[in-house]
Length: 132
Image 1 (cartoon, rainbow, N blue to C red):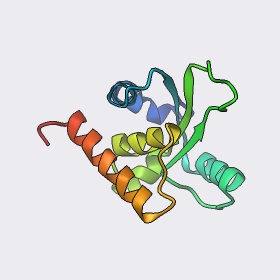
Image 2 (cartoon, one colour; image 1 turned 135 degrees about the vertical axis):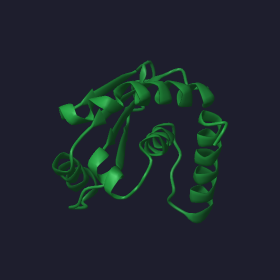
Image 3 (cartoon, one colour; image 1 turned 180 degrees about the horizontal axis):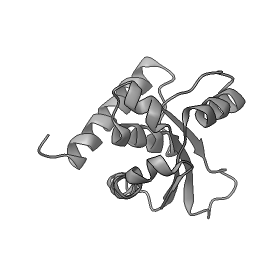
């Protein structure tokens, strides 16, 4: 598990996100790691534009590890944009959960997939925060 901050302002999130990712993978019974990158708005916009064709920043992007490397220890990479997440009053941990679910095969391409993914996100967040 690794958290890399491409901006020193985001280093404060590192340990919490590392713990959260580890717990989420445990909950999902995934015996793999996740690489987490914390990036600013410009970098996120560039990634979103280059990989999704959307020329704007976003909260989270996930990139699954290639399936033709079955012994690869990493499930993939999750990119989080703290300034975007904060400006939209979103939860950093929730966005990480969302990104990890994409890495392990969940999506929200249609209504039933979205509902299934949202329910699992809610269950995971309640499991992470049992008193909330």
